[in-house]
Length: 344
Image (cartoon, rainbow, N blue to C red; front, side, top):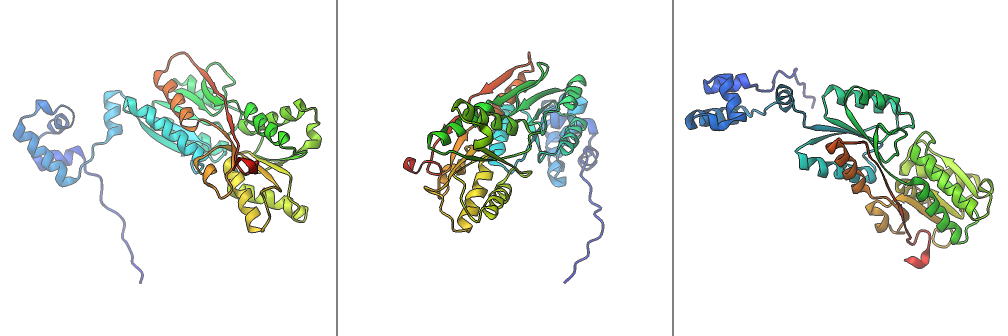
């Protein structure tokens, strides 16, 4: 059966509609919404009944513009599908709620053009400030936003300029912790499944791996095999490890460090589908320590980042809007059975 719908003609009820139905002035409706104590009880009741009958919802944006106040904060994260960024967004929400602000949220998908499009839209909507996980190391467009009078705080990335506040995790240290662990477990080679070097976090984690190898007295070129993926998710992990296994005839790499936990989950999934043993044969380390990491069939060793605290602290800096601040959290290695069977 085919159903054909005509064009939608319904429109959102306005203050004028409420005033007509209640037989009062627009100013009286405004008073009922904003200063009800100024309106007689009988009149207020009549207006409230009209509001209910029309299912009228006040236009907050218009009211904010008239009052000269803005209560919305914009945030552009890399990928809201990743639980790491979901937890970060919750941290943002928890902080801005203390100031009665609401959040407009978008994912750049590591695409600079998409990031800039959302930033422009948020500016057009008149947000009070912006929180941004940059998709590249280039931030001239963010400096231009600051020059236009809008506060910006970088999230999960150190700021290259004192003009823009930032809240980040030491990703060089995080990469170093992962590699030190794998080397300590006796692995002579490390396959690092990484993202594009244009993303600061990816570049810094590689630098940390190289530093750990150098401090162990080894040559990074002989120890590290880097595989770069464009999709920092489970599908990207599947493709990367599949290419290795196909090339090596299902010979399992000794140790795999993944740029995030979702990529590591993709690696584990591919290994299971191919019927290949992981425990005792291949060590896997992820990054972020998302909640599911400890609940997997093979619990995942991961470099823990303070997800919620990152968002909360960045939002706090944005809300206080004082002297620019640059906060750096330290990561922590959480060892589980995916890299050390004895830990399980």
